[in-house]
Image 1 (cartoon, one colour):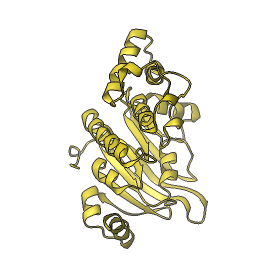
Image 2 (tube, helix red, strand yellow; image 1 turned 120 degrees about the vertical axis):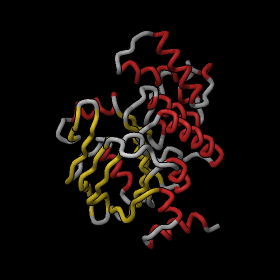
Image 3 (tube, rainbow, N blue to C red; image 1 turned 180 degrees about the vertical axis):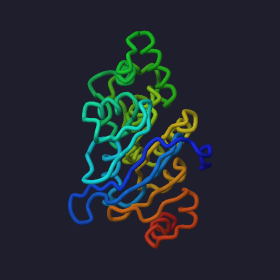
Image 4 (cartoon, rainbow, N blue to C red; image 1 turned 90 degrees about the vertical axis):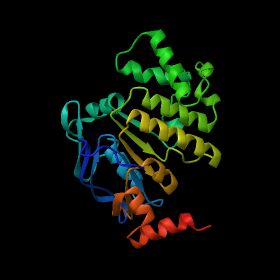
Length: 262
């Protein structure tokens, strides 16, 4: 992918984050800056620590050491110095989180339209007609039939549930989105369509994204920059095309070659 505009402001900053559960389990001494309009991919095999890092970055799990700084509407916020209530408000009002399992990001007992509308209601929108119109609009954007706005998510397929979760997340146009294996668990044809849709939305909305994936094809299509993790540490970082076309670390070379080898 092309790089975002030069010198955009820093949106999220990680300073020497560590969250360990035991030797080689978790993440250790991680630092980076995410700029506005940028997609940062975090890749690595299962157990590399990438999901632990995402939980820390998104306010779901406090680090053992280090700081997460968010440069938002209120200036610089230290994520783990502002209190749990404020962190939850950030995730609800300014951030978005796309779970690997869409059932973790949806309310299965209420309609598709209500799932989308709830996010807008958190911002103060109470007009039923406007909420319903927004729900139908976003269902169309994620290639769901707007006529199913009153259907509950448990009647949708897995791929459709993931699309609905994405609509629910993006309807408020969040400043920052965290995505945890957004195409994981889906068959190849569904993955391809979902990935194409995500790429379009990221570009059209100018989203700032932290993306965790084990799939290098997903990373190549969506991410401007990559961090490669192994055993809890970042072993290589840089522009996506540079890392995937000319990996320097032996592990990254193995990771890339294993994908390319039939």
